Image (tube, rainbow, N blue to C red; front, side, top):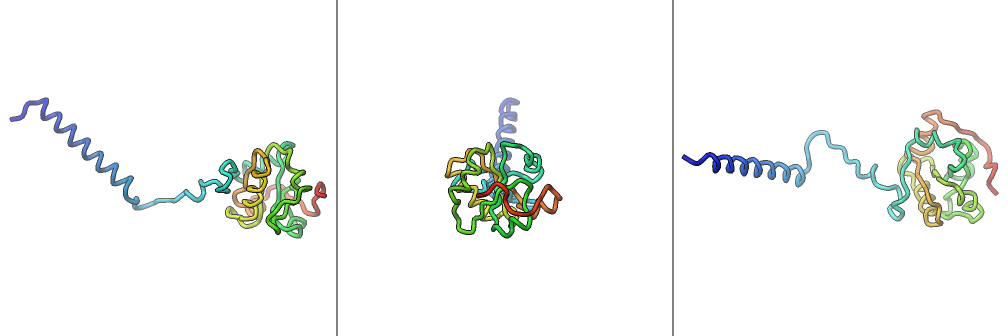
Length: 166
C-alpha cells in the first residue's frame, strides 16, 4: 500500500495532466458547435492605420450634434446630394484621393467619422479614413454598417449639396 502523501501527489499529478491535455485540446483544435469568428469584425478597419477604429451607429448618432465631430461622406457627390447624414461633408473617394480644400474642412475636427453605402466593409470609407489618418487627423472612425444602416435606423439625414464644401 502507498503512503497517503504519495497517493495524494499522484492524484494531483493526474489531475494536472488531465487539465493540461484539456487545455491543449481546446487551444490546439477548432471548437465544435456554436463558434463565431469575430476576427473580421474586431480587426481595425484600416490595416495600415491601426489607430483608426470602428464606430457603431448608436454611438455615432450621439455625436451628430457635437461641434468637434465631423461626418465625412465618401460616396459620390450625386449620392451625397440625394441624402446624407445631417451636417456631413462630402469627400468623394471616386479618385481615391482627398482634394486639399476638402482636407482643410476636417483637419481641425476632434473626431472624423467616415461612411459610405456598402455596409461594414465599405472600401471607400475605409480608404478615406486611411487618407485622413495619414494626413494627421488624430481621431478617425469608420461607421460600421454605413449609410444604409443609418437610414434603416431612421437616424438624422438631410439632402442637397454640401453647404460648407468649396
